[in-house]
Image (spheres, helix red, strand yellow):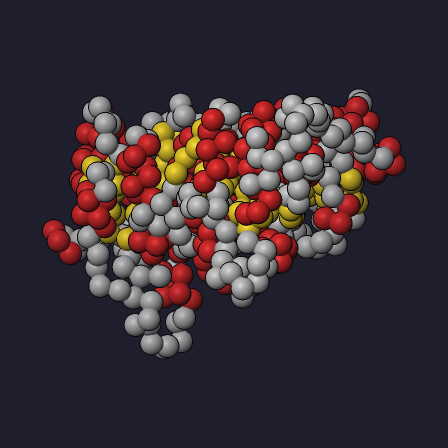
Length: 550
């Protein structure tokens, strides 16, 4: 057995069930080794798509996923997706073939590239250490929630291993130390005295739903999430849904009125706190995170607690004991409960419909479109959203069943990742309908992966919010600048989808959604692409908010 075969077998034995990639000569053998050992290999059409599929799969499955790449250009093609994964602390192994000869046309500084986007790096250096190095990389990805680039030099890949069984040493997941007693006491004291507490859960608290609900009930708090944890508190009557730029008017009112805000596994960054405007002038701010250096990184905090979100929440409930009851706060009354039920959702906020024209010139309001889709599409769905002016509409007008129903690859804010995100998320949640919400710019950037959807037989819905422009720039530059660089002739994206084997639907008015209904009610034997010609006379509400920080 050579090194490439051993690495593939070891990672499969450790629990890597899915690998994504584009195969070239350099990663051919390690990819086959993974597949031969039982890992499912998913072939993408572009390395960036493969990276994002792997990222989304890991997020939505809770597993360590793998990405396999050719040396040099395979890695550089994938770098945007790897940067997104690294910034999101996704447990991902990037198996990158490597040439270490500077005169090779494939040579680049692969460890330097990895470090430049925040990924960790491991190099397999010999047959004698290959298994241990692979186990170390897997453990780092799993326990530290890191994206790890594993460099596989071509000459080392072909090296034979010593004549010993290739059996990885079982490595138990690292246990987290309990939070410091004084920090728990300080947080419990703030919540015991609070009249309007709000708990905000981020990516690092998606596993802590039960504990956070129990804490909110114990101290009379309202619950919210960052965008990446949307759906975590679905069906909880005291949930405000998403905090930040996507927050509805009622959610923003109640969060900005809080006297104590506690972020669990949440960076409390400019997006989640609207550049700090959701923090009242007298509010006390607490941050709970596994990483000490994350505390106060984005804004000063009154109390910082190092620890796992679930463990900290449970410890604070115990510390509160009988000192607090939910009825004692201003945020747990019948009147507010009714307001949340009746006013919280964006679809319940009145708006002036932007729909224009008729016939071939008609354009539909993106809110009207998305409300219609929310009513038509099955509730058991996993929604993936690309970046752009349109992105708030599917993020906030499409409901999701829980935190595994929304995959938001936006840490790097790259356009073009949404379609691959939906593929990875759909594979991780096979019993749900994958819904990819894209702008026309991102859809055309990633169009090659429409072939991957069709090839995998995914019953996906791809919704393209088509304003024939890079809408964010159109609505950002409003001082008379020429916009011809960001506005394009109309493209028949429905025809593009048909060419890839999709059922095409063009939507210009609400009546056109009847074709979507027929697809939903039918056999769904082909994926559906909706080319929605949207009206966008002004920037989305969230975009106006976001650009205040640019």
